[in-house]
Image (cartoon, rainbow, N blue to C red; front, top):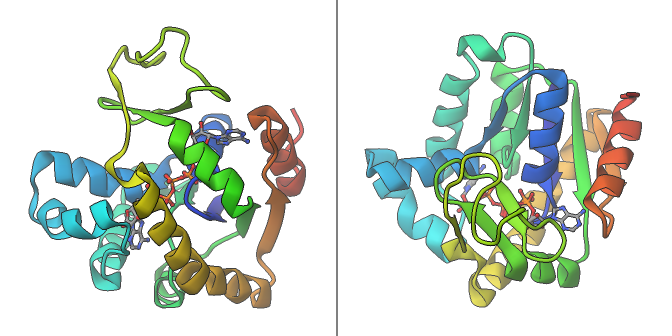
Length: 211
Ligand code: AP5
């Protein structure tokens, strides 16, 4: 399955993408994680992206499109993938249609006030980038990643003003992408629930996955 996950920052795309990836045995391709890794390693893309990511702005389309076009050619994408965080603009969606055939675009719908609560409580692993929430999805040991033992940290773009900026950009630039996929007959939507497992069930139902 070649699937796109759409939704506001903090809607739960990364969390559901990890679950789907394991279940479908396909990679998650997260542009956010790719950019954060590039920034950590100080690569040319990372240096270019840093100011955009840390202020909540979108990285220029040509940079992101190039990264994804190259990544989708790798061997592990042959049987499908879950795209998390791409496409985020109409230009990216149109470019993707030129080099990949997508099976579905699933939007996770969450209100802005719930998003703000989630971002405030989000912690990510500094090593493997797994995501937690201090109340709703806590690690077994406070501050430590369940998966790799790495230290959990707060993302720089999860501070209040940056979150507001990201939400504004989402409504302006990314919501039109939903309409694009609706017109292509590929859009599915679920309402994000308070409990993570309840959202997962709705995602499975929408995709026709039964366990
Ligand atoms: P990116 O990392 O993609 O950020 P985002 O889309 O803003 O998404 P998030 O990672 O913040 O949230 P998510 O929806 O994955 O939610 P999560 O599962 O973590 O991008 C970062 C930046 O990179 C962008 O701002 C931009 O600068 C740049 N960038 C990336 N892609 C780009 C592109 N295509 N074009 C241009 N620039 C690009 O969940 C959030 C929290 O909620 C977690 O704590 C989680 O545990 C919790 N949670 C999840 N689900 C539930 C639930 N159902 N109930 C309760 N808690 C829940």
